[in-house]
Length: 491
Image (cartoon, rainbow, N blue to C red; front, side):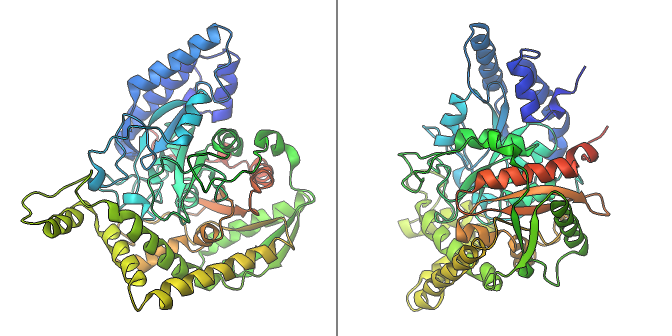
């Protein structure tokens, strides 16, 4: 019998729509795989077994009646635990929200339901999406399916690991400074950060509101395209969602690389870059030339300022957004406080983990009287300079290719005592959030240790169709998924 759980989402959809398999069979295959490997990976906060099987049976019944249940009919999808799902816990990886159960679905959840997707479960994450390893979860530490002693990346590590371990073909994550692309690179799967405003954030618990975006992980670029076609588009519940037409992303996949102009920023190949990562990306650039693309060096001169700018603006917004968790209206409340001020202090100290407290304090500091102009205002001005770098670059080239991360997945505990080194894991991704443009991480090679290496394909605003078609051409040429798979979970 075929191992259905190993198929891509698009392959599963094809079999379900042709009625070669049922939606229930596809869901049961994923559940069986989850039961076999989840105790070692720890990707999920909760699995919605009964609800998923019920949804799958409803899809099969609709097909039996001659109805079309939607473009993702019967496909199991996991959801990062920062996205609200009515009637089920949304913890954001934090003790503070340990008992929070939303009364409503996020817009992306509504759109997935309407498209016939089977909601499989909620995935683990760094607390309030603050981290690059999923070590900051208040619950468990998700493990990388390629090497169980290494991190899956973060903050969407659970979603990336669930897809890489073949527990689900698709998953949603969120990306504030690289939280989709970095774990996608570490776990060897495609992952897309969309243009700011392309996907509604209604029902996404906020970390940094000018940076956060929802996006998909898949087993193939086609999986990404199919899911994006469903979740993209303007939403009246989100004033930042853009009124921009949504292309047929799947139809656009066949456009290929010729005659695209690809820019390679010299600043993204610094001295500290792992040589294996640099060599892998340069090999892909050679393949891009062979496929008809024009590859040329460009400069993004303000790149060195991206990480300090990001950690000023992101922490400032986090300080503001997380002020609502005070132990009064909902969330964790510490017992035994003698007055309101003590209750606030105890509740926030016990409810938030070390990394979240660090970022709140940094953000409060840069927003405080006497420091606002020196830090926050200056960072906003540098953000404009970074944006202008990309505006000028996209007047010369159609797409940009860089490494996704400066190294392969690191070991647990390797960077937890050095926050700066952890923050530098996002050195190639955070700029993209500051600028608000789309980028996809694509697995392109294995390191000598047998760990995935990711390259980042960056597009202009709302250029997801062009970006996905180029990534699909590279994916087909590299054939990474057929040649490599995680072996840490083999019997």
